[in-house]
Amino acid sequence: MACNMCEEATPAQTCSDPTSNPSSTGDWVCTCAMPSTSSAVAHIAHCKFDECSVAGRCPAGQTCFEPDQETEGDWECQCDAPYYGTKVAGAAACERDECETHRETCAHEGQACVDADKMADGTWVCQCVDPDTGDDAQQKAAMCESTLECVTNAHICADADQHCVDPSAATQGDWVCECLSPYVEKMAGMQGPAVCELDECTIVCATCQQPSETEEKFCEHRQQACRDPDVTAGAMGDWVCECVAPATGDAAAQAEAVCTLDECMSQCASCSQGLCSDEGQTCVDPDTSEKSLNDWSCHCPAPSTDTNTLNSVEQCKHDECTVAAHAAVCTDAVPTQTCLDLNTNADSLMDWTCRCSLPSTTVATATAALCEHDECVVLCDACANTICTDAGQACVEPDTFTVGDWLCQCAAPALGERVVAAVPAAECVLDECGVMGKRVRIRE
Picture 1: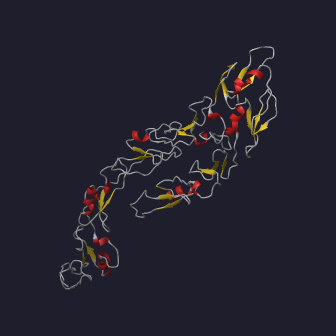
Picture 2 (picture 1 turned 180 degrees about the vertical axis):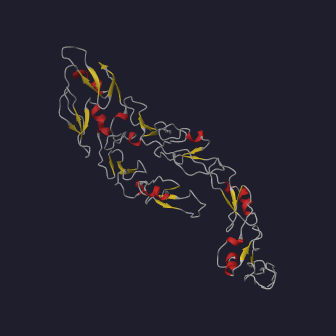
Picture 3 (picture 1 turned 90 degrees about the horizontal axis):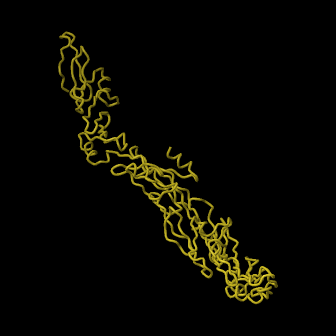
């Protein structure tokens, strides 16, 4: 059964038993296939391997990321900032939005920055914002023509890195300043600058987010939450990754947070949630990484031992023969006996036994046995029974608690008795003229 559990695991594991002694149970081991070096005693192992530990996974300018060490083929190459891009199990196609660096050049003139080819360098342009007109200018501010009231007021908006818009030619004094992308308007700018905000966690950019092929953002791709503590205009590069409950840990600025999830203490789908303590057992989570789940186990209180069961209450075992005082009762007996506890359930106490060595089969519970053995019932070439019966005599065992006291006895009407435990059998005589049944003891 043990080997089946290992071999039927996914991926298949190897089963080994370090001790083949029949009294040594529950010590079989499941070992993961290479390159993983993980193993587990008496249960299926969590096979972990950091695929990023293999040299040359990703080319220069990219960093290897391993989201789950228990899943094969999920490693990723992620582009180093200011480039962004991710590819699973291969080199990423790295992009860079140059407007992250040059946006202010355009914004100071109330214009939009556009990078049409993020795979190439030097392709960003400043672009007039409707209703302004003018040609795009590569790597510099464009020559844009404003309309209506914005002709004289555009500079007010441009000084705040915003754009001037006059919605109506018929109405005077209705021009407004509007936020330039990617900023969003919190309060309209009526004849003056607007209040603009930018939550960096909502945009894709080289300095704040690194999206994967599935459009997950940097933090979310790592099962964490992104938070921008200051969304006011100009406050860039202050976003952080935070742990998601029940995981805990300090937020990390523009990086993956180091989060811990103790499945023995937290409330989550895979957590112990008091199962161990309710049974008087101790919960242990050997790996509190937020990505290492379903590896907690309950541990029995001493002197009971565990059966190494994962994610459930332990079936505690207590071999009473491991108690030195109990074992000594058997080993110090004469003759020496073996201590054996056939029922090792933790609630089954004082049922350990002392067992006599063969050929005696005497057993005593919680005390030394009186080893009883009828030497005449053993059958072998040089045993008492064989020696006597081969000579047509009867084997007699006067005391089953004494070794070597058996003797052969002549069958009637023959007379004679062998000396105790002597070989060969007794010399029997038959005086056909004598009194039938009278026995004469013969000394060899």
